[in-house]
Structures are given as structure tokens and as C-alpha cells.
Image 1 (cartoon, each protein chain N blue to C red):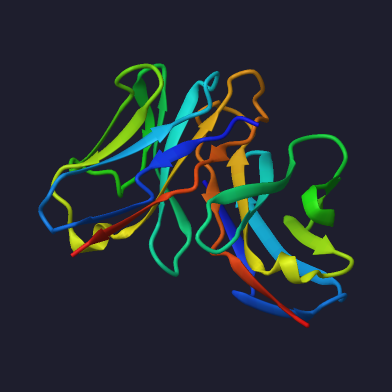
Image 2: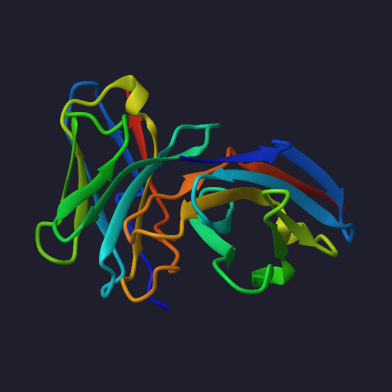
Length: 115
Length: 115
């Protein structure tokens, strides 16, 4: 069964460093998302991406964040200058375009630790 | 606007007992409703979803949920708990229009199954 994959599974970085989290969505999917889950808190929406542009973004997704689909298969989330409060599990998700009721399929997540 | 309230951040049941995880939602438009499960150190797996039609929906692993519009509820049940059901469960909602629409999650309920 097709699945969303994410790399790395765990990333440790120092405050102020740039990180890129990578995702490979399911191949025929058209909608892409990033969510994050700070330890002990709910899963929060960050951004949605469709037709090579951001469709919607949350208040969390400020100028330090960017997304890109560089090659038609990968979907990346970049954090330019990480802060301690960026430590969280980051989930990528994708959805097909054939049905409005289609669910989002989530990847296993990347745990980002900022020290 | 949409929101999800999950009553009980921790629920304990004995093995073989009924599992009932409560979820109430708020949505300004007709919703699609989801339950996701997260096992330790894993991603989010879809248990079941309600889109349209039958209000009682069956999912994987013997779980089911009933959409009650009058009560704005979507409680998750399983007749007999198994040790392998121990996990965190997230109720989620998204509007039923707009392909890129984000999913809004509840805070999650950790289910403990006691032998």
C-alpha cells in the first residue's frame, strides 16, 4: 500500500541553524500539508500546498518557514533559523484530488529537537 | 471556523471492556469527521471517517463511530478492548468543501488498557 515517507526520523539542530525536513507524498496525490505536534499538545496545522503554491497557512507559519516541491516528488519544509520552541514532531500529509471526501494520509513524522 | 473537543485526556479500561472515547465538534459548515490513532513513536493512522450517508461508520480494528448532528458529536466506540488498542486517539474535523482544507485536531485521548 502506498504511504507517505519522511526523512530524517529524528533531527537535532542548534538554535539559529537552518533545517530542511523532507517528505515524499503518495505519488498521485495533489494536496500536501505540514502539521506539527509539540510534545504533549495537539496536532496543529501549519500549511497546505496545491498546484505549486501555498493554499493556506496558519499563524505559526511565519517568515521563518517555507515549503517547496522541488522535483515533483519531494515536498520540503524549511525552517530558516530554528528556535527552541520549534522542537516538535513534524508530520507531512497528502491527499488525492479525486474525491472531496478523501482523507489525508500522514507520514511517520520527523522529530525535531532544537538545542 | 472549526474546533474539536475531546473529553478526557486519559481513559483507562479493562481488557474486554467497552471503549468509549468522546468527541464533540464545532463547524460553521457541514463537516467531515475523522478518528486517527497514534501508536508510540509512530505517525497518525486513520481509523475511520464520516463524510456523507450512513451516520454509523465502521473502521479498522473493530472501532466504530456515530455522527450525531443534533449533538455535534462523533464518539468512538469498541465493544471489547484489546491490549493492542493502547494508543493515543485523535478526533479531527475538516470542512466538506475545498480540496486543500486543513484538518483540525482535538487534543487527543490516551487509552490505557488494563489486563
